[in-house]
Image (cartoon, rainbow over all chains, first blue to last red):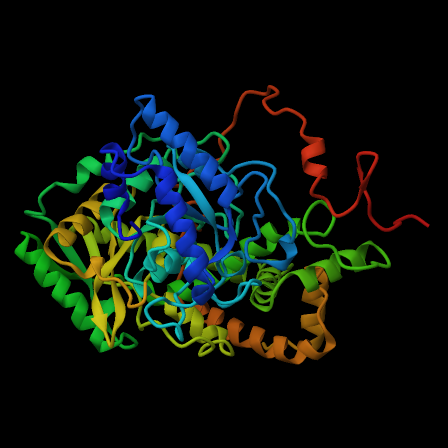
Length: 483
Length: 95
């Protein structure tokens, strides 16, 4: 049963081949058996899952239907879930049982999903390897000595290992697309403002966006259909109707114009990944697409700009963790300042402290123009590059990552080297456009991902291209040995 | 301009982050590496470019000035490290 996709589960439940409760019990047993190897869960919500599953079965018995009614999923542990530990994989949120549900959690619950648990991640979503979690590193099911990517590494590892058919993630600089690439999944970061950020614990508010990770584009469409939409509780949510993503899947690719940015295929890219990307291009041509080279000349400036904007916003967002209102408090503080400093010093891990300090410095008196304002100007240059490119092409295609999944611990001592892994994904967050990663084959037994980018609100187009590709290839159905 | 130990201590104070003495040299080195990466921005010509704060240029939405939320003080205080009689407890701030 664990091999079923969401679409197959929907058919199985509708045809009464199995109940949601049977499926849920079977996956809970699988998680208990296999997750110790991966560490992809922070909390397994067995009781909640079984009550949601029996409720979904009752709704179906009463004649209700719905693509996600009774479907088991998991949430990245930064989506607030009422009365369940929501840790952001940080010691500073020790004991934080959220008093309310995030909008995404609420919307998926009302669609009838069953929450199996809360998934491991890089602390406060800061990382590309899922090694900065207070709850320990997550292992890649394709090779247990390697990282699954991050920051949504628990979501990726759990779905890739068939512990779950789909999970929520968030993407601030590549945190859905990069782990999807390194674990052979499909993952989509929607347009900024498409999915509500309410109750999604903030890292960098002008970049963060929630989205799904699943094994197929069709499953991502099912998840995103339920997750997307305007939310008055999120002041940056966009008031625009949600497209019919499922209907978009079947559109033929005849006449699709694909742009290949020459900057994505230069130095720094593992040539074997580059070759896999070109085989995807050939396949899409057979489906009727045309291809041309384009240029995104400001791409190289994205990482420096991102590492100002994201830490600056993080330093502001994370000031709320003060040891007073929720979460971890140090022992025996001697005064208020000692309480703040020690609670935060002991509660945050090394990478989070680094980014808070970079952000604090960038925003401090006398430096604002040189750093934050400068980065925002570069951000516009990057957006302008995309606007110009999309005059000539419908989607942009390239590698999701420059390298394959690396060994656990390999980049721990060099944060700057780890930052450079996000080179291809970060521009979509700065510009706010949607991006998707899909499986494109294997090198040395490790998955390779291809990234597709589209203009604002064209999530349907991305899912369409990925779905059509998945109709003629089988990379996405390959499962890791032992799972 | 590279950060020195005293700069790092000042930044940590501004961010109300307690650092271990032993971690300060390593933190200083790492922050300088990160700032080295960031400083590549300065070579980019941004003359006449307007800063971009929101990808879709959205501005703050306003709503009608009416009560929409109920008081959830008990739920919120149930997860606080220390409360008493509906108040959050902190060390004494006035001698």
